[in-house]
Image (tube, rainbow, N blue to C red; front, side):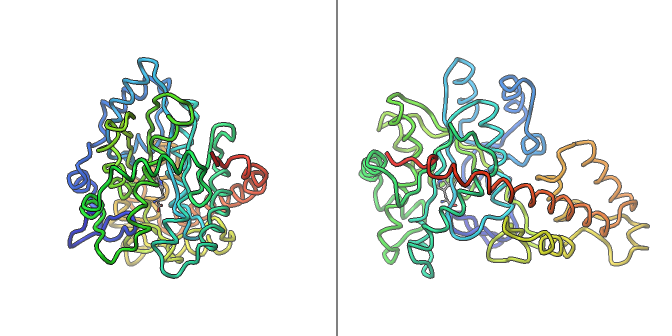
Length: 375
Ligand code: TRP
């Protein structure tokens, strides 16, 4: 658990001013550097995802090891997840698109865990049926991202099969109360369901090995807030005869309003995949920007894209072309681009994306059942 005066980053809450260099130190991970980018490029035919090119994937555990493993002919599986506590928003989708890129490049299986149990146990206001219901709604959004349906398997915790549950129990025998207390900040008043959850979230790290009957490492693209789980899992992996999970950590996407990441608890700051174009466009047009008080001032002094949430949205997902992104930055700084048209342009792109995403969701409805793994 990492908490200081300015920010909170735990598996359940991420808020405040995030200093990513500090987070690397606090979590004890490694910065994602250029050597890694180059090593990755050799395996992807030179193609590098914008989130890596732009430093949004900022930290990792053992990714260098995984690349060497792949170079020498080894395979791996992807593992990521979602806590179904409500509708999906764009901040969730961004790392999933990155995960899809990894799946496309390496043609590997993806195990996608849906922790409906965790969300029920953590949030006093939910019934179990509610979080199970969200699990199915969220899977539609996830499949609409375009994962390979043949190679993507959802583990819905409430419906996980006997092999999965056996594995979680084996893991739980090796994790003590004092470990979860230290890593997750649990205490005597934490319900006992949550105390067990680290074993459930660790299980997909070894599950592909069980499914295929041989040792397969997993690569987990996720927010750094989930890292405590991987730390606990890495500690026991060798002893249990598995590879340690490898992790890639990406930055959180800011909300539209000032301060903090995109979050369901602040709907004005967040575009949900269920928003209508009209609602989404209104939200974008009210976003916090790096603009000046008046147009005259902005023409004279330029804006500040470095603090602008609209610019961050272009950078993280709505402008793939590096040259166009750089031009947007320069035009803003030079006072040639005003916030009005810049927001309007983003709103158009967001609306177009929503239309596409919503229509893809209809197409994937039939795939849901066959993508759930229950062994
Ligand atoms: N605990 C995560 C959440 O609340 C869900 C999750 C499970 C997950 N397994 C994961 C997220 C692996 C990232 C990677 O959102």
